[in-house]
Length: 538
Image 1: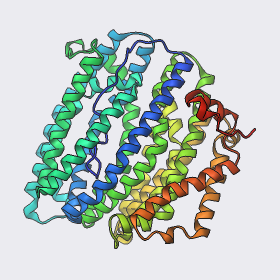
Image 2 (image 1 turned 45 degrees about the vertical axis):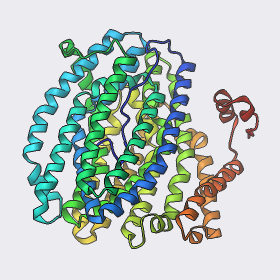
Image 3 (image 1 turned 90 degrees about the horizontal axis):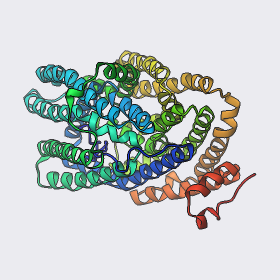
Image 4 (image 1 turned 60 degrees about the vertical axis):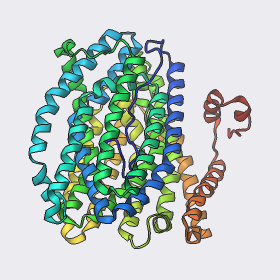
């Protein structure tokens, strides 16, 4: 279940990367890898987005609003169980990148096997506890007729079993992500997206309903485990299943780093999953589905800028290992600039076009879903501004600042949601999430700028001023032209995406984009004939 979104498509890549893992590392090589990985992440997003847009209404119509809410809650239970990862996956990405830069394959092999032993020690007792309390938890969080409790409990238990099987192997699978070969990772994810598409359509068209969907998801996760292990052995022959290599010193180092990542994962999961548990426990189960669809689409909009920062942690780790502080500051400013440039149009489009989009895509009469789109799009746009800094500091072995603030924001979210849900109902949960997201960014940005030796004026001038001007102009033109009111079909709504992007692009040109630094970056990574057409504002 952790490998699938609400549309049934894989959320987590299942295969590692290829290439010689012990090549030389230099600033230019690091920059090239960041750009290459970003392009592959973007390609994956563009290929899988239409699959999700098709599957989401298909699954809702096949299951109905109530069973779709049940499906979403089962996924939430599995996603919350991912806390058993303890942040080890991200920690291994960091250490693999570091030891790969130093050409130390033996240490990589020892560390991933140490991680396997740690996973076994953590996951085995936790799984047994979760299996024993599944039915009481289902009674609390699933507002369904009592006769459905045993069936849903079985679905949750089966999904938990296969999820934990994959989790204990994650140390091996995550090792290859530290090599920064996101091309193969994304190609594998695309393959599984199509498997999910055809499998989901077949299962639901054959009338197998929720039972068939859960069974197909389990089969797909098993296939993912097999594919990932084959790729590890093929592309990383020096990594093997050797748990006897367990090293206490390595375990302490991994857990010492991963603890702060774990705190961040807790806050992230509460933002993305705990809200659904609150809704399931206090409100009708169909509202879980509404919230799930909205957060999934906002998450897809987030993936556009997120793809730009995905490779930054390992890149910062490599630069930090080489003592290149100036290059790290430049990496932050560029990533911050392009995250805002790329993310702003998607979030503002969702705010402006939420109603015609939901009405034509899912169906009318879902005002709660529309409200969630609009409020969380605005909050997520602000929150994304802090993500490049979080990735940079994690690469510098300073993830604690982001994580502590994230936990504080989680507390605000829970207090607001639980305290007001009896009066505001569903709205309390959405507002609590939005306030928490904004609070994290507002408190974190000054901290990361201080750590990197940057002032707010520099960041505003180099990163934010052009997107802010272009975004304001784009929104004004869209509203004055009445474009959202012209959309009475899904085709027209989707056609507004390139239209809105065109308006935003023209607004960027008026705001002075691209500058010389943008042109230099594009010239290095685009074909010469294409780069020659790019104007420059000096």
